[in-house]
Image 1 (cartoon, rainbow, N blue to C red):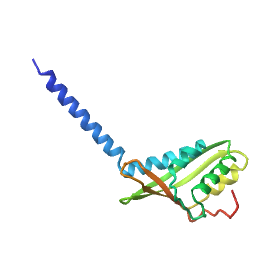
Image 2 (image 1 turned 45 degrees about the vertical axis):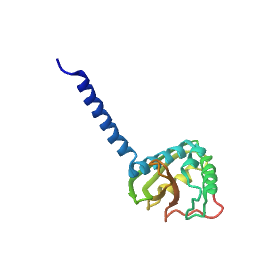
Image 3 (image 1 turned 120 degrees about the vertical axis):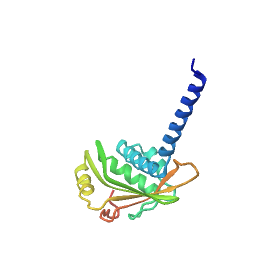
Image 4 (image 1 turned 135 degrees about the vertical axis):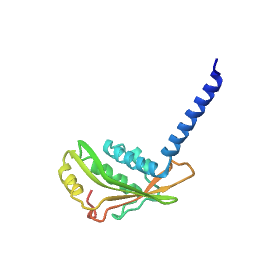
Length: 161
């Protein structure tokens, strides 16, 4: 008669090993940055501004002169022009360094609303990808914050949006 305890022990050990590999891959820096970028875009689509704010670092700065508060206010303002919004990222690439990472992708917007056609055409016609700079904030593997966004082709005149 086979030892059921021994088989149960080995089965438990195998499950723990597989689960450990899963967590290792999930909590890897590249995976976390990719997931954070995807979740950030999804929260912008949903216009969940408090959730978007949770992704943005306190010392955020960008090429258009936005700090964290100005970015969130600008996103709220632009979000009001849409009844529905879908954001799609393509050709996404992630680069990791010890405490920082970049995620870059071409971003396409599709939505309906008051000024949605103008915003969609402006974003969708860009030839350069958006680059999101992420910074690892603490020892926790999932603690990444957006510190900068850039796109050399996107021009936002002062006072617009």
